[in-house]
Structure formats: structure tokens, C-alpha cells
Length: 238
Image (cartoon, rainbow, N blue to C red):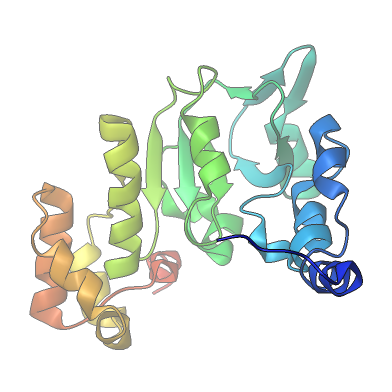
């Protein structure tokens, strides 16, 4: 089959509708255009870019902890005390190093009051739901591969699925925070909709062999509830 172009103007107009800035791919060879800007210029949709050029992460330190990168050093505890939270920018340059275990906290209010969980961890990182691929790559880097990870999330199918996603990548570096009073918390504060809205995930979790996941799934099946992690903030309030 041979195609012959007879109307170049029509082709240019059609191409411009799909790719409004046709020379961006050439410019990007020099790294001048950021990924989401490139997606707008070529596809009119920033979300078509899988990631931005960098990602800020929020951390809180409960005891002395330093983040270092090259000659730069950040006192995470001092920033937490003075500003309420510390922030690092993860990019494609040299990675930050934090020489202590990190708790990954799913929800904002628990992150802001992380000390109430009494996990024994010094540094908490706010995940805002599922942990991004860039943060996972950072945790897998040479600078961070010695740090243990404690997952602190909702006790529902989605939260356990996220824990298993990290466990399958990082193995025994990852543990799940489960307070001793978890049975009582389920009974007192559990929510049926957390299971109803995630039944396919729960069905898959019932086949998992991880002992902590199996125990929590059994509690869910017995009570008919999932549990939002904010309930842990109420333990010492009664």
C-alpha cells in the first residue's frame, strides 16, 4: 500500500490538534522541558506524563535525625520543631540518606500526630495514600537500602494491599504497625463500608500467607469491619 499526501496544510492542522508544540521532543533531548510541561505541549494533557521531574516528601522527626546529600545536611528534628514538618526534594540527582528506620504513614492527621502511635520510630514520612514509585526507588537506593520500613496505614483491604506491595518489593525490611489493642479498636471503631467497597481486594487477601495480614483479614471477616488508622489516635483519649 502506498499513501500519497495531497494536502499538507490539512495534515499540519490535524497534527497541531494532537501535538500543539511539535518541536518539544527535540528540545527535551537537552532536558529543557519538564515531563508534565512536555505532556501538555505534545498531548495537551499533563497527566499523560507518568511523573514530574522531582517530588517533595514531607517528614517529621521525633528525635535527632539528619538527612544528608553530598555536602548538604538537613536537621529533620530542628525543622519539625520550628516549622512542624521537614521537606526534602527527591529528583534524579544524588539521593538523600537518612540513617534510621522510617515509618510510612498513610493519612495526614496521623502523620501530624505521629508521636501518639508510639511506634518507636524516629522519622515518619507522609505517603498520602499509596507510596509513589519515586519514593519507592529512593528507599531502594544505595543510600537508603539499610533503613527499615514500618508501614502505618488503614486496617482495611486497601491498606493491607499497600503493605503487601511494599513487602513484595522490600521483603523483611518492611513491617506492619499493629497495636496490641487492635481487636478492641476494630470492635469499637470499625466501619463496614471499608470492606464493602473493597471486596475484590479482600477476596485476594484471604489467599495471602503473610501471618500479620492473615490475622487482620480474620478480624475483618469476624467483625465485618475495616478500621481507619485515625482510631489509633483515640487509644489514650478514653
